[in-house]
Length: 370
Ligand SMILES: [Zn+2]
Image 1 (cartoon, protein in one colour):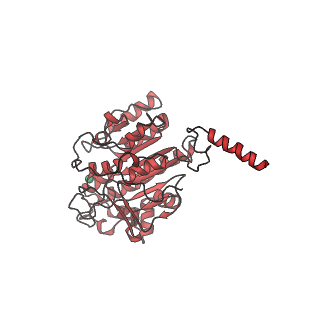
Image 2 (cartoon, protein in one colour; image 1 turned 45 degrees about the vertical axis):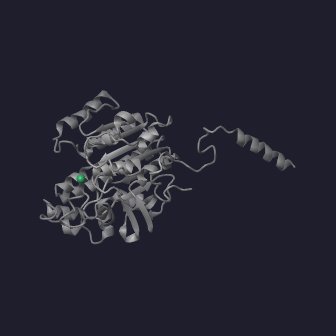
Image 3 (tube, protein in one colour; image 1 turned 135 degrees about the vertical axis):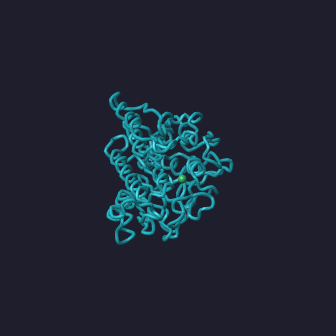
């Protein structure tokens, strides 16, 4: 009888628990409170999973300026060694502690569903979770659809705590900065957030003093620096970092610089993750998701290109790591689409984005521990 009384009392307690109780108090095992989404524009799955391709490590098809230095830096005897030297954080940390999708030798599909295979349709697909046929150019048109960032921005717990940084000046339109209220800085926008006036001046000087090599796109180092500063100062719950030099150097047929940027982007992500894991607000409460907006051509001639008629350009990949993601490493036998990115970002936070629109793809399978 005594046991029954206690049980009844416990039931009473449980019923009285308010809905706003935190995940930990309610006994759920969900830990993610913050998400960092990173995109590496047009980074091919081929290099991610196999490392540098010998067919482009030359002057003619790869535009490599210093063959010896590029080989010394990125060529190794096996694909495993090549991918590890190219993206060491991805392979030494994420592959061990998280999950990777996109290795075609493991019966995995990871595809963009939009027919265009270039940036705006790709980013819209990954941020909105579905393909909209009206999105068919890279023009600066405000996205008619709500991205997962805007969806979160509308939830009080996240409002004002969503920020996006991109090297490309079209990202504010894809995110619909004006309507969404998401904080967006891109390309050569002035630096508006820094810990001190001195730091602001220092970051602004970099923007002002470096050459504007591309008219609408800033070097990844600038975008990364301003995003890190914002993270330290404003402490957003969702940070979207869009890097894109990989795409620029590929279009320019500079395989050496494309490889360099894959490697430098990997290091930036490591720095970001190490900062997160050293900070009490973020440590063990932050999930990281990395993907791309499109793939590229497969061979020595067309690796530079992407688009509707380029075979291979629909192929994408994903990397996920965080407190709610099992360490399954390189995933096998699984079908994924680029649009799964959006619902995954929300689901990592315990939010249901998919319920807002039936077109939205579900989250990446089994990245969130039940
Ligand atoms: Zn491109």
